[in-house]
Structures are given as C-alpha cells and as structure tokens.
Length: 285
Image (cartoon, rainbow, N blue to C red; front, side, top):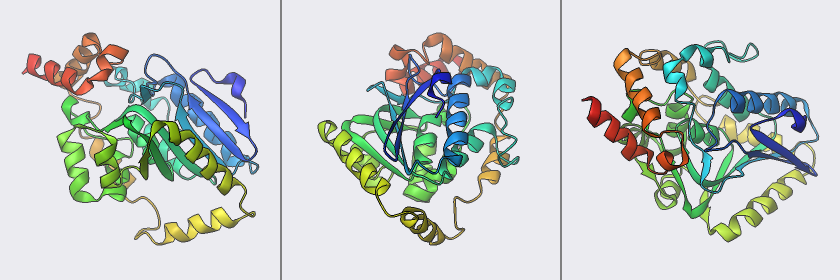
C-alpha cells in the first residue's frame, strides 16, 4: 500500500486486515482527491493477496463521508474526467469506483459513525457488511431534494439491501435515517453501542482474515450465486436513467450553486443538509 501518496485517506495494516481511514476535512466529501485515493487503493488491493479483509472507516466521528462533491453539479466535466479505463465503460465514474470496491477479492466491512449521504452511502453499500455506532450514525439519499436521484449505484444497492418499497421511500422521501430504522430495514447489518463497535469489527475482521486460504472467497462466491443475477443488477440502466437528469438543466445547477453558497459541504451546513436543501428549494420556487 502506497499510503504516502494519499492525501484524502490513510491506510494501515495489521496482519491480513487493511484499514482504510477516510480523513479529508471538513466533511470527507467524495471529491477529486478522495476518488483518486480510493481508486488507487482499490487498484493496489486487487493485486495484494496478503490482504484478506478491508475495513473502511472515518477519522471524523461526525462524518463518515458527506456525499459526492456538489461542485460536480456545476462542472460535470471534472467528474467525467475520472472515467476509469479499466472499468465497465457503460458506468459513470462513481459507479465504476463503487463497483470495483464491491468486487474486491477481499471481504469488505464498512464501520460507520456520523453522517453518510448520497455518494457516501453508496460507497458504504458497496461493502460486504456495514456496522454502525448506535445513535451516532445517520444515512440518507437526499439527491431528489436537489433535483436529481442517486446515480453512484444507490438505486441498485438499496434495492438489493432493503427491497423495492423501502428503496422508493428512501430515494423519493430523501430523509435522513438513524440506526434504528437503518437496522430494521437491513440497510446496515447491525447497530452497536459506540464503545463496542471498534472491538466487534476488529474481532470479526481478524476472524475472517485468519480463515484457511480460499474459504472466504469460496463462501462469497456461493453466497453471490444465490442472487437472481449473480451480482448487483442493472447498473448500466441506472447510468442511462441518471443521464436524463445529470448533467443537469440550468435551474438545477443554480439550486446546487445556491446550496453551496448556503453552506453545503461545510460542517455547519452538513449537520442538517436536508433542511438547507429545502430552504434553497423554497427560495428558488
């Protein structure tokens, strides 16, 4: 792992477990730096057979990963410049990143604290498992409040985890969900008291890493085969549908610009991003 070249995350190793720690103030936005660092980690992990388990977490207890960079609403070209030539060309750059993470040969665990919305949730959903600090973690897909909808894999990953009806509620309702509902819906594996979360995930990760060679990968292959299509369906369809709303028309771009001006992507604005986005929408209606 070339940790020295990362600017938005840190990677540590302990035995067969690699910890990827998102550390990109102010709110761990999935921006150019973060996407490049995650892509670099994925490229290295794909080839590193000594890594058995990847634990994805945040250095910031208030924000796991805010969302994708809202400036990409204003300048879509910067996002599309991140197209990965090694990934499926039918997918957009965030879908490509999340799918490469989802397809890693290692077992992947997202350890969640704080807020994760939109692209941040999509990244966590690409992991094999998600464990969250009870009462200290909030998940949301607020994209429809901005005039778009989840396009980094969110519609497909959600449907897989929580089912169609709850996916419709989450995507179109665009609310922020606490751990009680997220656990009930199956969005996360389980919510644990914050003081127990680290030890639980560490123990699970070490147990998996210490399994005999090939056991975890064979088990995952069998589990994945139980799904109707063998994997996550129809990401290309999500990409084609998302192209109907992004790049966005001028009025939606203006809403994003007003959101940034009102404090989106600052710590203060991101605490209640949904209310901020509603206020912006009201001011432009």
